[in-house]
Length: 452
Ligand code: ATP
Image (tube, rainbow, N blue to C red; front, top):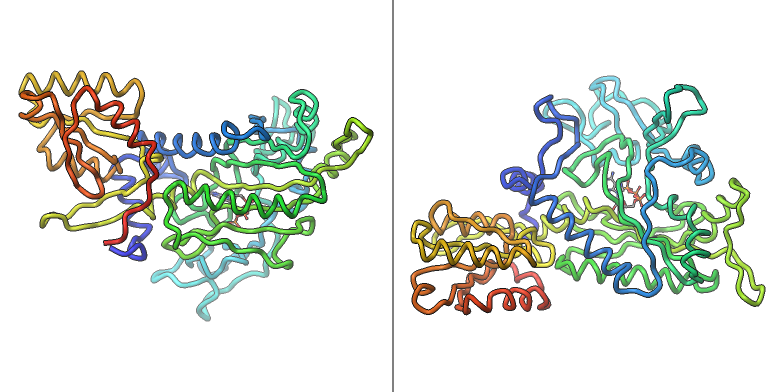
């Protein structure tokens, strides 16, 4: 099956069927484009976040972690430009009563059946575009007046800029250094959709890298490359990744360079991650609005406002890219199977432990013991219900890379079968060596199997 045959519908249906993701508030009729994550979805999201934090913080000397509040002083959003300018152009259709993003009409479906592009037929009656602010408003405290007006953050980055001085002084950093954080962001998107690709509540992973102004261009190139390689390391196929550099007309006025790392989703090439060279804009704005100088002063009196290079991505866009990249329908030994060929690093379950004949006391006990040993170190699953073939196919669908089967031979020589999800090859390993086998297997470099 070619990657181009993977549709969003197939991926949505698998994630639903196997409990990765549920439409939110379903028993109340749902809330458009809002989702809840089930067990495997949570495990997989945790893996993505952990790998990001490992690459950004744990394995580096020059980046520290932060977890700032979701609701900030509203003046933060005035200084950042979000109150005045975090808008998308909105058009209404007087005929079908739906709203669309004026700059994304090509990607939108109109409300009539069969659905058309907004503006495609003579019946469509679109208003002139007007600017719509994407920030969710809320009130802080019991009083509902102007003074209590606040916003849910639309990005995590501003929480980083306002902590620049704390980190500079207390973590004793000097440029080049970065601050990384992950957390929920909220945007009242006009046209959410395409499953988790565009949602109103999502988890961002952002890193602001502060550098001497003269070095900004070089660091910007460095981070584009570094982030592209990180996505490759997750197992995303090379041919489905590309970098698209924005032209001057597409960039924010303060940015001297922006690149999208794009992924070939079933809906076409779309932004997976953005890397921007933001100049001194953010620190200068917050200095002006807060009165607190956000600058670097060196030991010999040298002072400057660092420039900022920002890689920003959401877990949701990575999650969808990984699932689309991994989804395959195959015929194996005259049987159809659906398999998620996920990299073992991001797979929600690393191995399944399966007693071949669950009512056999010897097999059941050995399987339980092995499960007890492995679960202390790995995300593993014990499954003793149904025929072995069905159990394998269930694990294939959730992307479990290996299954350890306890069978008759185990009772004779204390070895188990390891079944490989992708090649279906089987080998035998001693039951006592399974933990170290799995640990070594998870360390091995992995690349996606060639398309069948
Ligand atoms: P778009 O043009 O698609 O609306 P953007 O350029 O506004 O995106 P940024 O503000 O650069 O996006 O956000 C940084 C990253 O956050 C994006 O690259 C994407 O990974 C993620 N992201 C942004 N909006 C959403 C959303 N509504 N749902 C899921 N992820 C999002």
